[in-house]
Image 1: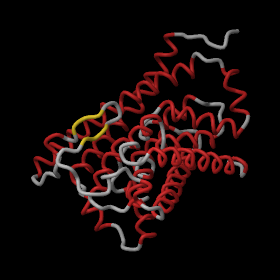
Image 2: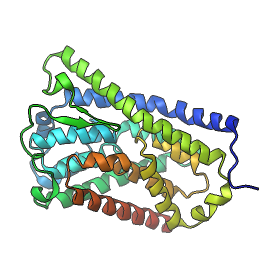
Image 3: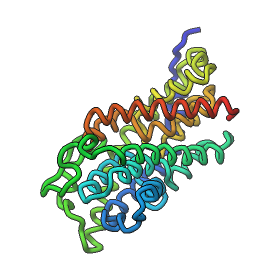
Image 4: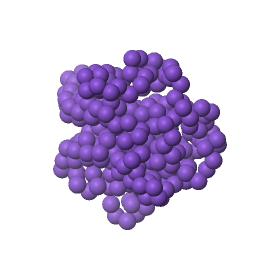
Length: 318
């Protein structure tokens, strides 16, 4: 028996199953992301946050419930907010938390894990995402801005800024460089932003769905079972997979739930928390805001923090 046996029919069924389940959530998340981009200004966000720094960071971790964003969109929006004067701790907390602490992600996670303790997985994912995001925000809040951000990020917006999507660097919203005031212009901007987010992130989702469909149908279980049998190895290996696949948080639960049946729930939890906070595309996107040293330290801190936390949850019997 070989370790790899590809059958086109099995691959097609698995691929279309993941695709058809996940695309509606990706579309819904993109639409909401576009509306947030068009209608939520930095000034409005600042009015929501309390004056107390600790309370402001904690509330920033919950803003994804009101203003959900995918990880690609949150980086672009947070760069704009930082240039408008939003504190670094609040900005980073929202950037890390919004892709996880979101009603769309809660719905997609619950739907993906039907029959696999969906309520527990959903609550653990959102709760852990909130705690990790707040912890990172509080740490960065205590550091000098000059050691964390690139020069010119925490300041006035230039007349022709540029943003980076998941696939390319493009002019920032073109005619939408300034926040539009009329309803028609805002709706136009919302459609533009939603379309850009959907097309960019859909590419990663399709690639991820194809890879995981091959893993689930063509790779013999004996190859993955040794990793799945060791909780610590299972957790860290799925975190590496999350980095490589670079999926959107609105659809990654369908990959985790269907593609790694032998892996423990804590390994899938690590996949679902670490992936939206750091992956290959986010490494480059974070480089538009943070100094490279900050990006690398953020990656290492998130990797070991999330991995050890999930390992402890495994030891507690989850």
